[in-house]
Amino acid sequence: MAKNPSPVWHPFTQHGLGEPIPLISHASGARLHDAAGNSWIDAISSWWITTHGHAHPRIMAAIRAQTEKLDQIIFAGWTHEPAETLAAALVRITPDPLTRVFFSDSGSTSVEVALKMALGYWFNIGEARSRILVLEHSYHGDTIGTMSVGERGVYNRAWQPLLFDVDTIPFPHEGGEQATLDALDAACTEKPAAFIVEPLILGAGGMLVYPAWVLAEMRSICARHGVLFIADEVMTGWGRTGTRFACDQAGIIPDIMCLSKGLTGGAIPLAVTLCIEPVFDAHYSHDRSKTFYHSSSYTANPIACAAANANLEIWRDEPVQQRIDALAGAQAAHLALLSRHPRVANPRRIGTIAALDVTTPDSGYLSNLAPRLAAFYRERGVLLRPLGNSVYVMPPYCTDATELAQVWEAIADSLDTI
Ligand SMILES: *Cc1c(COP(=O)(O)O)cnc(C)c1O
Image (tube, rainbow, N blue to C red; front, side):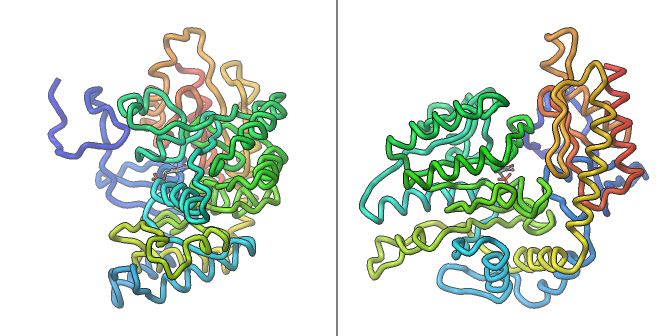
């Protein structure tokens, strides 16, 4: 087979299968376009990041304006207005106990920072704890540290020897919630440093949903045992689950919270890790050795911070919550229609995210089901990227009824065709 002539090595892409790689030239709202006039509806928000739609004018304008002023500045010991404004705003819109904001540049890094903060906290207060509790089927990123706290499998087998040990709590499947809570309670008695969790829905693990009361119970178990509770809201943040943050639905306040993806509306990379004052205090000292030793070159890049500030203004000034509620309702209606299809199992939805499992008569077929379905949708002008046999729709909030109908029609047709 002729190898792809482009030198680009794409993420999570098997170049050896020779699948076409569309070249996108521009995008706006929920639509992606190529130079030849083809277009696709971005039904997965470009991998869960685009919230208000592509090229939102306000975010683009904020980026342009910031490029006239300040491009980049070392953030160790120096600061700038977009970061100060953003940090203050984030502290304002999150629950009061979250008082400090540490900047980084991707979801994975925000999780690495969270883990380092947790261990730094215990180390600096003189009670070295290092074990991390995780939920089964979790995904927290693709760096060595974040793979360590995520599900082990084909996606990380080659690096298994480098991954550190964690204690895994069973996923709270319907009917098994108490077993999850009991396992967490037992694991917490072994004095772990922290429990990290994706609140309400596990994304890459297959869009697995669990109830808010379980999240609330898990949080209170950790509080009871003095185990730091890390909420990875990298995917769930910024309205995906129906509320601005998934933790809001459970009425819980994490000790450490990771945000990225929709933080800039999905326009440009940025991440933050928020924490409670005691975590900051443990690193606050006349003793330099207690410094939080973490940085990346582009920490709090001013242009990215300006985009995030524009995102917060959109949340303040535009009817974002109404759009989310409307999209959630439309998703529910489409899912309900399709859930009676004989090929559909486990229809599920939370907020703007709808998912279903595709059943096939031949289980050997399952292994390449996802890429086959993705190719089918691509031909139909829809960007969807099933996870195994789970098809999910997670569109930008600007997606209109016609666009959403086209997405669900493609899914319905795929079930009849495969
Ligand atoms: C996407 C994701 C990450 C990783 O974010 P990147 O920006 O891709 O590094 C971490 N946690 C969750 C829950 C995610 O969905």
